[in-house]
Length: 134
Image 1: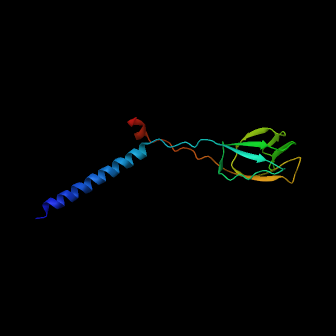
Image 2: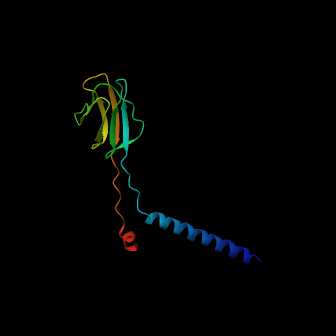
């Protein structure tokens, strides 16, 4: 007779399926994680902008750090922004538009850089059934 082993197998399978469904339901009900804006430093040293090696999004902040003994600017070629960075000081810029932006220093035009800015992903609407459960 195989009834005992078949029953144990189908009971274990049913329990496993219920566990998977419970995990999936809890994941679906969890609130989506919001992207937190970050601050990224671009250091100016020896008349050179450091490269930005992290992904940038709209809402992130660029903190320009001028280590040189003379003033610089970070000026967008598309004229979206123009930041003055005095010698030995810092300046900040909040990124407001997505796209690739080439920039330069107005005082030293050979100083150039590029920022690749992606749009922030809007959070999806929360289904009414999830709201009712809370």
